[in-house]
Figure 1 (tube, rainbow, N blue to C red):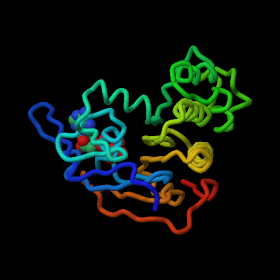
Figure 2: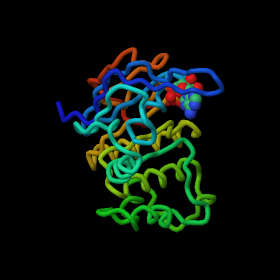
Figure 3: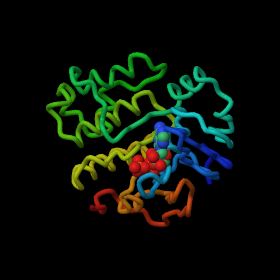
Length: 235
Ligand SMILES: Nc1ncnc2c1ncn2[C@@H]1O[C@H](COP(=O)(O)OP(=O)(O)OP(=O)(O)O)[C@@H](O)[C@H]1O
């Protein structure tokens, strides 16, 4: 088995809003491994995004342990967390968050211009099958194409982990499959550890490891002996 990338122990996240307390994560124990593609599956509100945000250094846990390669993220200051995110993590969200006034290439270059060891924007876009749309603006691209540009932007700095929160949530099945293929290819070709949130159970077939969430905790973790190609997935 490959190296443990993320390790959590009794991880708790509580939100306080308007006098009420929501326990978004209630004692999560989890290990995730390098170069794997993990799917986090579960109903709305079960805590998937909360966990992903903590793993990615976007949010602090309330209590418990969360380690990235043995380094305790809960001990990091905001400044150190920013550095951790910048150096190690690529994010992809449901809505692509591209800058509308910049072309696909320029959207990716926003990252490659400031990263220490980036791939060229053209290479990142080629890896997601977008070479022929490199000078197009987001409004000239379909939702799936925009999401592939967003993936290119996320991987251009060569992050160790790619965290995807509902990357196909806004897409139909055939467009979504192209996005899943891009994520699978990044995981396989670059060895990038990928974690993909979905509430679409069909997607779990492409994962090495599937983590099922229920009510702020993990109900089961399973592994797929045989994985599906994204082209075999439909919803
Ligand atoms: N910033 C916040 N303030 C207050 N409550 C929050 C906040 N973020 C999440 N929650 C609550 O925490 C719980 C877990 O939310 P989370 O977004 O992690 O679930 P999820 O499984 O990702 O759901 P979805 O699939 O709908 O995105 C929910 O009850 C949600 O309402």
